[in-house]
Structure formats: structure tokens, C-alpha cells
Image (cartoon, rainbow, N blue to C red):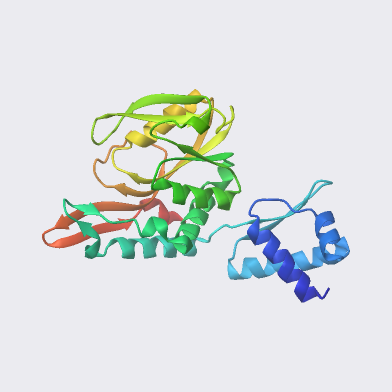
Length: 271
């Protein structure tokens, strides 16, 4: 097999399996090439990815080592993703009666969701989460792409339990914005005890749902490694959780004149 063909094959394998270590032995058997030759191929891929800011190719030393791909975005790439999100959300045609904002197209756009997932993965990869957790329903696509980028399982918290969940943990929490009692349930098998959990959600107003998820993870003896939110509202300023990362801040939705005021979150300026 020519080097160009090997490089194409290795690149495909790495990109399709983020954060999964692929051994040189496996690559050698698959491609019929010596490990020393494959190491040279991987060096070319690593250099090219670094030069074009396509993520990071890491070599893992040791008998069980190999190579893996980390889909990490540069600061400029993260700002570009959030900038596009701000532009899309600022369209006054998104305003619905009652001052609500239409975002269903955003949480259903595969390419954009892949970028958002890689952004959250870049933000939280060094905290080494074992599981991504979200609450149904609109947060599921965002959390799924984040879990894929990190190569970890996704656990979906339901508003009510299902027969297929087996033994579940159900708890009540207070919605921060509406001050209503809400219920959330999660299968006991979804989050192993001692896991490091990354919470991902689509929207945060007062932070009641995020606070509920944090408390629920305590019932699993799991540690919350981070909280990522697609959109947060500027008001109320004080949230029920402290350590979280949002991508954009929604300041106002005005029906007269029709206007959506949205901006990037402050943390983005430091990346």
C-alpha cells in the first residue's frame, strides 16, 4: 500500500474514533506495514493537523499505547463557531408570539451541532469526564455530539421514568425561573458510582434544572466535572449554579421593535 493510501486510511480511522487509542499493532495488521513506517505516517498526519489547526494527534507510549485523535478547536475556531451562533440567533424572524425565540433549527443542524460538540469537548476535555449527562429533550442533540467528541457515553435524564430504564433514581427540584416543583429520573445503570460527569444543556435562565442535575448526580456518588450551556439569559444575573460555561448570552427579545439582543459569553475573550 502506498504511503498516501496509508495516510488516508489512518486519518479516517483516527477522526472517526476521537479520544480512542488505536494501537500500532492493529494498524500494522490492517495496513500490512511495519510499525516504524506507520510512525512516520503518523508524524506527517500530526504535523499537518497541527499546521491547519484540525485537532491534535497524540502518541501514547507503552505496551498498550498507540495513537489517538483529540478534536480540539483553536481559540479562533471557537470564536468563529460562537460568532456564527450569535449571528443566527440575532435574526428577528426567530421571534415567536409571547417573546419566545425559535431555536429548533439550530439544535437540529448536524454540522453546527458537530462544531458545538467539539467546542464543549475542547472546553472540558482536561477535566476528563467519564459521562455526559443531559435532560430531555432539546439538549439531547448537543449532548450527543459532545459525548461523541469526547468518546464517552451519554446519559439522558427523563421527566418521568420508563419501563426499560430498570431501577431509577427520581427526585424533585425547584425550577429556578417558574418556581415550580419539577421531577427528573435517571436509570441507576446510566452513571456508575464515582464517575466524573459533564452536564450539557441547551438553555439556562435561573439555573434550576442545572442545580437539579447537580443534586441528582450526588445521588449517584458522581462528581460534576463541568456544566456547559448553549444559551443563557442575562437575567437573572445570579444563577443557582456557579461553575458553568455558556456559549452565548441572550439579553433581550423585543417584539416592538422586533429585535433579538445576544452576545458571546465573556469567557470566550480569553481563549
